[in-house]
Amino acid sequence: MVGNVISRRKFVRVATSLGAVGLAAPAILRSARAANELVFVGFGGEYQAGQTKAFFEPFEKATGIKVVQTTGVDLAKLRAMVQSGNVEWDLVSIPDRLRYTAVQDGLLMPLDYGVIDAKKIMPELVTPHAIGGVTIPMLLTYSTKAYSADKAPRTWPEFWSLDRFPGQRGMYNGPVYTLEFALIADGVPKDKLYPLDVDRAFRSLDKIKSKLIWWSQMSQPGPMLKSGEIVLTPWVRSIAHMLAGEPLGISYEGAALTFEAWTVPKGAKNAAAAMRFIEFALQPRQQAELTKYIAYGPTNPEAMPLVDPKVAALLSSQPANKEKGFLLDGNYWGPNLEKLTERWNLWRLG
Amino acid sequence: MSAIDTLVRRHGLTTCLLLPPLVFLAAFFVVPLIEVVRGSFFAPDLTFDHYARMASEPLYLRVVSITLKIALLTVLLCVLLGYAAAYLIATASPRARQLLMLCVIVPFFLSTLIRNYIWMAILQRSGLLNHALRDLGLITEPLALMYNQTGVVVVMVNMLLPFTIFPILSSLLAISPDLYHASSSLGAGPIRTFCRVTLPMSLPGVVAGALLVFIVSLGFFITPALVGGQKEMMISNLIDFHIRQVLNWPFAFALANVLLCGTLVLYFLYARSVEGRLPRTAFP
Image 1 (cartoon, helix red, strand yellow):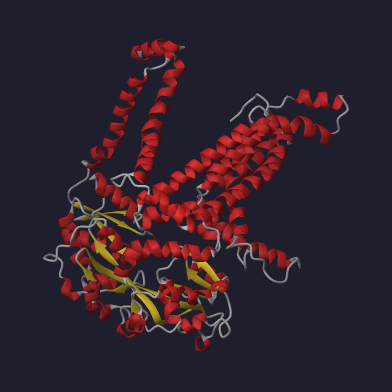
Image 2 (tube, helix red, strand yellow):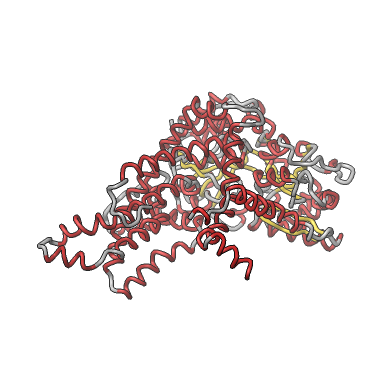
């Protein structure tokens, strides 16, 4: 038998060279990519289908640059690409909450504000590495089957009032948004939220903990509201579902306003084309076009007059709605997310 | 062709057949695993901070113990139900056996996520099960079958049941029918035959199935996130958070290593405790 065993050294040598071929494979495949295209990664679904109609198809028609689409925005994947020097994505639309981490980790390149005209965009959504593409609100949402419009809860203190508004409540399973709502419910003015009084927020949450059902995917509240599992919840997709005719009501009172931003990964191969694309996607016509497919708000105020008035009235870009809410502070959450999530999880188990 | 011939002649067929999978495992399992262990200690200098944090923050030990509890509960139910199912399949006629096997395999074709959502439609307050129970007059208020441990364990058992059914089935089918004849001709009834012949002879399958289910269930994270409640938090949920949300990979690596070491320790304790007590046929 001894003669049949491959020497250890020889085995290691063969294994290493085969491993090297495996590691080099992406680089070999990469060189096959055409220069005149742009790789976009999105969240898929109706949202990305809308982005195709509103941005990608007209951009290709106007410039001849084809936008190749993939799905699955994932910071971990982006980091692996940047670290290995093989960045497949040229264009990522990321939620503001993740932007801070991406910038901190050196995953994004500064935007070229010579090509992108930032002046037309809401100033609070413009940062060196990211520029707001759509506004998204986390809104108090209720089932109109449970509450008639005149008797529905409108504010976070009312959401917290179990006597006046009985029924199971849904809540996002995480400290972001939730701690802010808990503080507003406890009487903190919405312009004095940050830095968060975390102890007070958890004490406030304790009061309704027993009536909460947690959801962790943005798609979950839809079926929960439909089946009557919950009658009330904060949610980001309520407007789209309302427009689709579901029996839902919303209130902008104390809503958390956030946004998704256009970014370009560090080391992107077609960065110049990506900058041109971003400038194109920020045009009023393109932004208004997107609202036909998905009810997220334009970040360019000039787009609002072009939006169907029925839809425009519901969007968080509407000044009257915006005034009632607060801007979720990505710069606060970036450095605090890890510690506060740890505490959040412990509180859940408590 | 001749090169392969020479290789086979020089090193033997077994070695040559083993080489490709070994190279594959070395490149895509051992190397990343070493990286995960190294990454938890060096960032870039030697540090034990991540392990210290895990020990000092009460959250992590609690989540590890919840993970173990849910995994063990899943194993127990999978073994009991899986044994019953395997016994039924083993004793069925060949035609019925094929049909039953198909029933076990088909759900495997559906994605895990979709199966989770299907279970949510069944288990929720206004779901199929609660409706059926209410229509039968068995309950007046809907039962809380989801957003708690019951829901998580029910769904996990459903996902992992085939992992016990198949190994148990193959050990049941390997038992020679002569043994049953011998047992009954010596005067043993069906219960006694089962306890003295069938069960001990099929134990290797039970052990293999239980281990598989245990190891796979330690890594579950979609199910606890979707059908779990306040307290169904598993270690993989925390690993996922640190990998993808805050990009703290060293800490995620440390969590993964603790999980891996815990599993290995349990495996060796388990292997020691059953060593020599199993029939010699096939120890996993």
